[in-house]
Image (tube, rainbow, N blue to C red; front, side, top):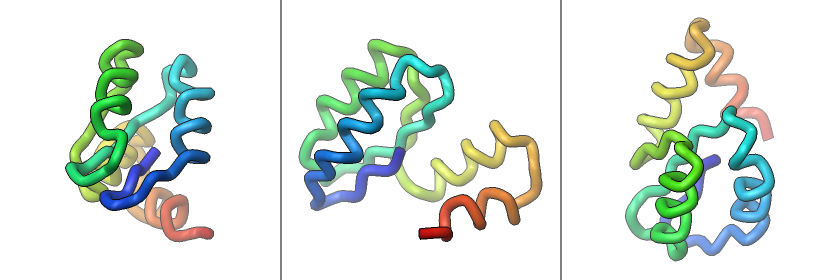
Length: 79
């Protein structure tokens, strides 16, 4: 999940909450996101990896997937 600074993102928050126990999430919540404290608390409670920015999220996804950059880039850039 990526929460962009300056946004509210209620649907993304809901979706993240629905999947928090799956063990498959990696969350990026930079400073400036309105509910950053809530996101950090939930990630801590459920041991979900939390990174600070989009570049760190991409790196974490690459590491988890263990594949080349094309897979992650396609995953992120597709609408």
